[in-house]
Image (cartoon, rainbow, N blue to C red; front, side, top):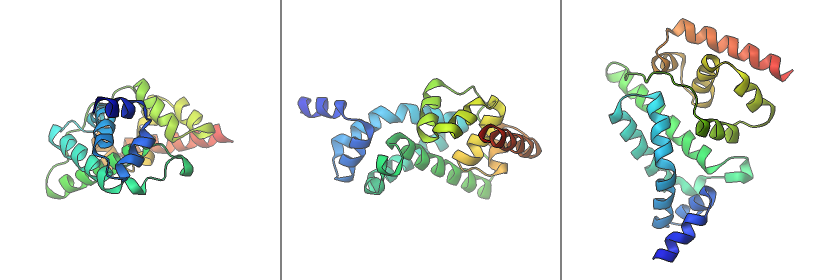
Length: 185
């Protein structure tokens, strides 16, 4: 058993997802062990409600277990970590929408500077000139663009998430898009 765990420890996340697609429970446990702390931190930056974060984590890893065979991987220009975050971000949006439909939106986490690990994941998801231009944006503009474009949140959801008026979100999104266009010309 110890040699199996040691062997799994040496595999990258993409290979772990491939093993999970084959029903390998030990690979799933290793993937969870590696990615869940990072995932929880990133979700907490976007939502201060621990109950929602826990639900999103559970739904995300359940989706990973069920849909690991759908992961296209490096062949499609993606990474396993990026794929996991895409699932989690969509689940978080769904949770925001459910909450907004039934009651008040969840309390938003205070905006925080982007952590180096998040920068690495962002670089893996958005590379090249676009990634460079995105990283050169001011933190305020980058947060809005990340929430709306990368995480797929609406203006209202982004406003709730960042604790900003909707008009400010719209203005920052416009300024970010203009800056991106200029940087990419």
